[in-house]
Amino acid sequence: PEQLVALDARIVLHDQSVTREQLPRLAIRPYPRRYASSWTASDGTQLSLRPIRPEDEPLMVRFHAGLSEQTVYQRYFQALGLDQRTAHERLTRICFNDYDREIALVAERHGEAGPEIVGVGRLSRQHARNEAEFAILVSDGFQGRGLGTELLRRLVEIGREEKMDRITAEILEGNVGMQRAAIRNGFGLRHVPQLGQLDAVLDLREPVATESQ
Image 1 (cartoon, rainbow, N blue to C red):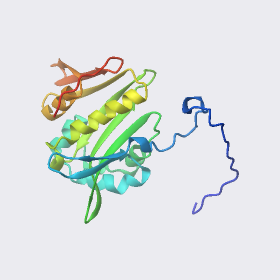
Image 2: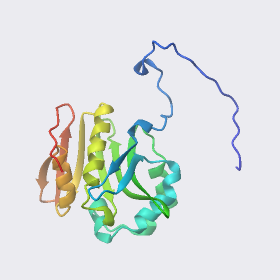
Image 3: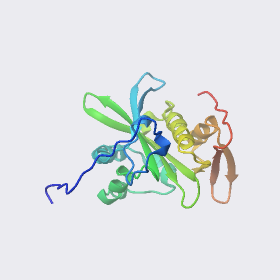
Image 4: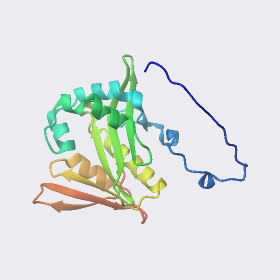
């Protein structure tokens, strides 16, 4: 249990004329580094936006510890305790993504105390359908700075690159900030009063007109 043993290894080289699309599909998709880049918030704060990694679990614990009850409720549609949100079994699944089925982006700030996660955006493929559902969670101190809108914009870009047909989400009536972020990224909203929510839908098969922040 304290070590890893490699029983076999091999390297396969392909001719330079072989395109990426022609390469055999890997059983485990590599870390999608192309989705990582920097971003500047409206107040000038520099952040790194990148796909989540398994070693982010301690940072995710700290991130959840700083969330208010209202922020948690708007994300999960219920009061979810800190112990539930930071359980090791749960965070292991969240931080260790199967990038073919789910891609989570974290917004990371680098300060004197070390790295800190201040936002998470997740794009999860729906079973048996070529579409995905998005979910975004931003720390209370970073709300209102455009981070939610930027995370969603990047998730839409990923959805297009991954050749998805649609992206959907359910947004609570009181979550005005997320509704605005969805509209700015081209989503259509449909009110479902009996559920107290709005259904957001973006058809990626059509060009999207985005609104500036």
